Image (cartoon, rainbow, N blue to C red):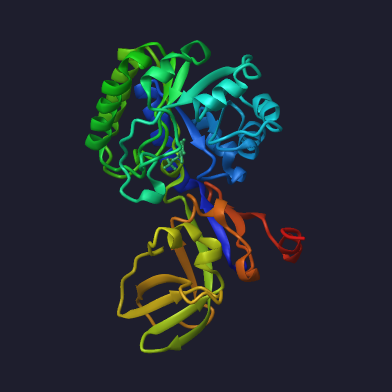
Length: 366
Ligand SMILES: *Cc1c(COP(=O)(O)O)cnc(C)c1O
């Protein structure tokens, strides 16, 4: 019997392609790779990913705890701001803590003196043109940029984190921005033992020049005498996961519409925020449909796609690329049934690892 939809399906065979590229890059460049949990925190596949990556990085107390307890290996803590009441627990889970500001570093550096400490730098250039996701946007709160100020706290940090790429598929742009970072922060980098270049680099993509990238990272590490880290989120899990849905109704209102047992607002929110369409493959055929969510939000629309035959109630549809910034953002809007989480093993067998029911919905509020 077919599994009941909706569910997210993480396919280990597809995930393996990314993992193998990450492992190869680590080997060729000497860089370490930490999974960015804010992008993907589906810990049911951490046992599998652990062999190919060095650990995790985080954006909060809960993420660093998940990283330590469910992934293990090297655990980096970072947050835009820590509260006094959480800092000790954060430190207890971390190998390294990266402060977002000099002020946070000064506030907590004594407490964190037993672990490696670092600071986020903001090079004030980025690859993002969408200001919601641009760490270098005007008045950005993400990291320090004034060399003179950073100079004064160098006795308390041994390294830096610089995250200014965003879904950057262009190696030459990465290369130019790194040169710019070297230009701006060179003297500080020389005094560092490690530098994390953050995430946002699409190096597991099909045509990415992995060898050139590895060579560039190795050269950077050699020039400054640092251990390089990368923090791939999207690159780790890209194209590994689908959202499996079923058609509940079809209508014709000047266009063919199909309503599915899911909601873009509740189950793929990131697409709505960035005003992108979902992906359905192969998207070929004579019959065009607007695929709509079942919430009452007028714009709950996955997009318009082509199908080889008219859609009918009960048809299954796979929405592609449902891992990054998707499963971590699912919510209970409209009380829509939350997708279960299933894993396709390397041998093709599928098992459900988590199901959500009314109690989860009820318990999410009080
Ligand atoms: C978001 C983020 C990442 C991961 O970014 P991806 O684009 O998913 O690779 C890594 N490091 C930091 C500091 C981040 O904020």
